[in-house]
Amino acid sequence: MNATVIRTRHVVVVGTGGTIASRFDPALGRTVASQGIETIIGAAAPPRDLPRLTFENFSTIAGFNMTLGFAESLLWRLSELVARDDVDGAVVTQGTDTMEETSFLADLLIDTPKPLIFTGAQLAQDHPQSDGPRNVIDAVRVAAAENTSGLGAIVCFNGQLHAAREVTKVHTSALETFQSYQYGALGVVDGERVIVYRRPQIRLHLRPDGLDKRVELLKAALGADGRMIDAARQIGVDGLVIEAFGRGNLSAEFGQAMARACHAGLPVIVTSRCPVGRVEPVYGGGGGGGRDLEDAGAIFAGDLKGPKARLLLIAALGDPTARGRIRELFNILGP
Image 1: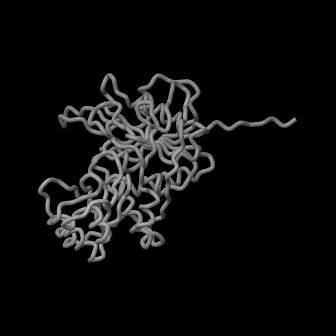
Image 2: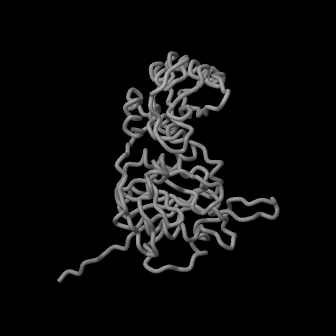
Image 3: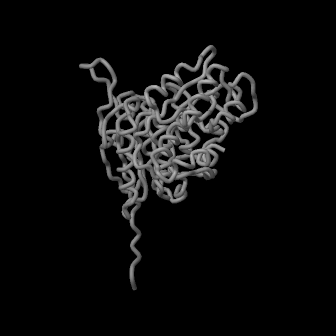
């Protein structure tokens, strides 16, 4: 009689720094990222039934210091890890400032059914109430859970699971900083249980040669004109994303400058500076209404917000098979 061998599930935890890895440095007089991921895990009470863990300290930098080049290197490493047969999922610990963007890039660029879980902390590693140990243990459970396969990249924070496309950092310091506004969480971690309420329906995968295209993100404001658009064109940007008013409107001067950019062949994406809701080309008048912008060639991003619209455009411009389908791609990911 042959015995059945059940392999223990294996999760790789990749540390990149951030608040979760930070302590106060008296020599510098400030809190800095300095701790390895093993230190963070070791600060938690040893829970039961964890999978086999492997630790990889990729870096110790602050989330606000991440660059596109750094994100690209991190994602290639994650791709290598989840491609291994002996790895069932991966956890990334990083700074919260850019977590919604790196997780979105991971969802966009890494085509795998294996869970990719991003987490961090709002309170530093040496804070007596640090949320880091609980968050990373929760994230490990999510990465090892069979019911999270195929969900794509997830932000696991404060006991909640959020889809990378939908999640936003909404508070500077509160523990419940990550929310998905009108979408709601995908699920929760309740003790040792990982509960999934729903599965993301809107996903897209691209294969850019690199993330080196320069796309600027501009924001409409009372009295703002189009000089920033003209300046961006002069320095040779590859594309623009504009966070417009409300449903997707700009002042006449701003809209006319945007039209000049479109007529020059620059891809221009319109999203809203409002935290919730879709842009839609409805209004007209003076060249700045949403219908005027669409007529000039702007692409409306649906409910996709500015930082993620920028990353989608960067990835699309870097993918030879996607450059001619930018409008189509935004219709898919930002309906």
